[in-house]
Image 1 (spheres, rainbow, N blue to C red):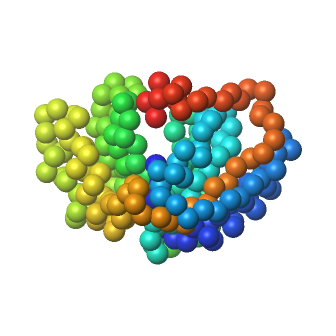
Image 2: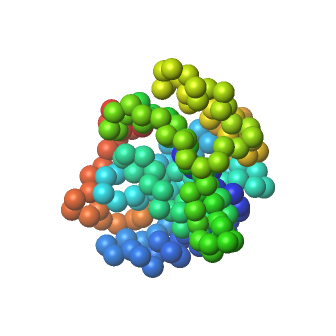
Length: 209
């Protein structure tokens, strides 16, 4: 999942134009808006797809942060969030909390380099053997006390993720099903590429999503 700092309205307006400009399979780009809790917005994403992201969700959490998710089978690709950071000169927190790893990335705009930069990456992954990684300067709010734990999985925990959400002032109640928020659902209407396939929610769960 991704949390992008800024306005969902501005992001979606740009995103629809950008997605339309790069569409090469004759699909129409549709945008729908709702006022609803997140547990009603997320079920709009299936079917999940491989090879081609087709359904995208932007939810305005508060005046500062936007929740972003897509329907890609292996997890939301970071290309859209990277574009938003570049265009709006902002920052983005991405969180991976799956069976094969638990880590965060913070991508932010740098005035010095006039480009986006990876500001922070910390956590663990089992992609090529269980390993802990710690790139960039830690923030004051991080649970750096856990980094010395003998077991790698104990060096970055759910508490570590909560520390980032708290430290960046991202609403911890973003998943509260009693709170209605502005949600923007963008999707492609048309045919799939031959190499793309669709997967149900149950099938996607097998991939640890």
